[in-house]
Length: 170
Image 1 (cartoon, rainbow, N blue to C red):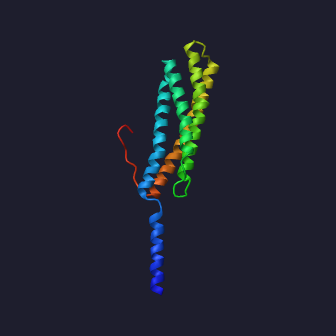
Image 2 (cartoon, rainbow, N blue to C red):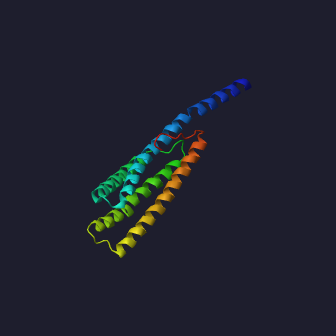
Image 3 (cartoon, rainbow, N blue to C red):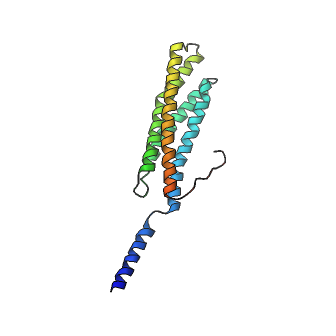
């Protein structure tokens, strides 16, 4: 009887272990979040490259794309469920996408509007100060959000025992 109980106990524990998430599912989860991250990063980088003010129309367009993509990225990330009952990576991702959405709507918009003034020749010292304040706020918020999501991803990969691979272009 004891032998049967032990065998039954082992079978039940094997079933519980085999029913949990697998490493490849963790990799897919990571890739799903980072796919959204990469698309938004490209739009954000494109916007930053346009801040030289040489082409106001390109700047306005890149801001619109960044802003629109930050909205849709936030919607996408809000649809993702926690992985294996844990929220750390998801919460860091939510923080990142909310922060970038706020940056796009606030700092990036103000910077775009102020650079547009320069094209008309009315960017004055006061507006230049406002631009620099927005740029510093942009950088500070972005750095905090970026560090948060990257640390969470690092912890997630460590927990699920997989290594991130560099891909071409990154």
